Image 1 (cartoon, rainbow, N blue to C red):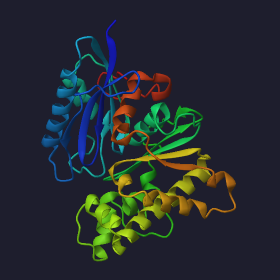
Image 2 (cartoon, one colour):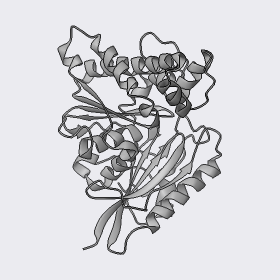
Image 3 (cartoon, helix red, strand yellow):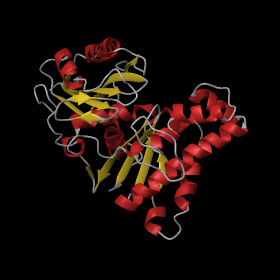
Image 4 (cartoon, helix red, strand yellow):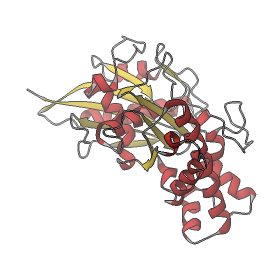
Length: 321
């Protein structure tokens, strides 16, 4: 029998990636490919980036293997029933038929899609830092802030696919305007670009999260304050989520989550202020156990682990999933 592989696709505000993932949650060496996305990209350029990574990954399948399905994790919001995506930080795509695009590239292969935050939660519950946890919040802190939930050991699916989108929970003590129309949303405070933007209002001259990380490591006071601000907002959002859902673990990945270990310390300190509620303070806030492979592994879970990845709602096109 051919070795079954999932073709995993992760579409976000900075890049799109695709890779082949085996049934143990491991990426097939040499199959991972990346192309840029971004706020200034045209729809045509985005379509081209997606097509390139999907074709390259699919072509890399070993002779003894078979691609049995495609799993897509995409920054939200998404629309599962229509198979469309409208990533907040990619304005060229509003209601874009991403599922249909990929079905056309790999005809005859079933395609399933979920929000990227749910994919990271599935990955952490499968082979990452959330193994054994009944109630898990997976978070991505990067260009945006996404999230997804595993509750009572099962993925928390939702009608449109946007459940668990913790990046647009409003956090107390902040009034930053958010692109979603709200104020004080976690993404508006704690995403990488928004944290750097805040630091620049305080005199920081760097331009990227990497610049901020270097300045933080060197003890720059503005960088220290910026990371504390972001971590505090993350901790407050986690506290609110844990009050609502009685979480065991919050596993956080994404590029900006690695700006400094202090980000996690500040989040835990904000959580610890809930001194009257032992059930809130018991939640563990941990880095992703999967480095930057988590979103791809989670997308693959939609294919390899139907009881965990879910009997996902049909996603347009052929409805395969």
